Image (cartoon, rainbow, N blue to C red; front, side, top):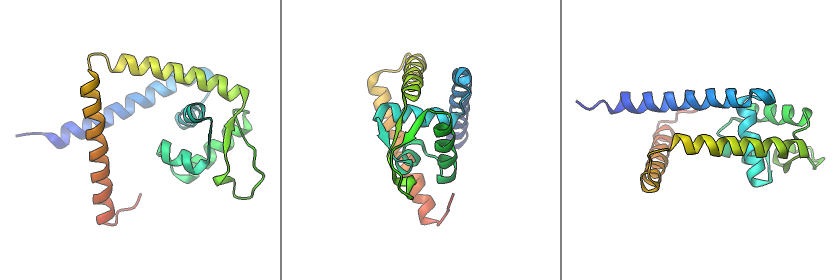
Length: 150
C-alpha cells in the first residue's frame, strides 16, 4: 500500500524544520529571527515592497509581518519613506545596514540552495516546483470549498 500521506506530510514537515533550523543558525550572527530573514531577503531582491506584498511573498500573516517590520525598522534595517497613516500599503526599503545584511543573507541562501539541490537536475527541479505549486493550489481550493480559515 502506498503511504503517500505519511511520506508527503513527513517530508514537508522535516524540510520546513530544516529550513527553520538553518535560518536560525545562519542568522545567529545578526540576531535575527526566521521571519526577519525572509523579509530582508525579499526586500534585498526586490528593492522596495509594501508590508502587504511581503505578507504574500513570505506567507506571513498581517500581525506577524507588522511586528517584523516594526522590529527591523527600529533596528535600522529598513525604512518607510511614507508618512501616510496607511503604512501597511506604503513602500519599505532597506537602509545601508539592511542592504549589507540582505546581501549576506542572499549569499548564504544561494550557497545552501546549491548544496541542498546537489544531484537534482534542472528538469527534475522544474517538475518538482510545478508539482508543489499544483498541490498548493489544490489544497487552497479544498480549504476554500470547505470554508476552512487559517
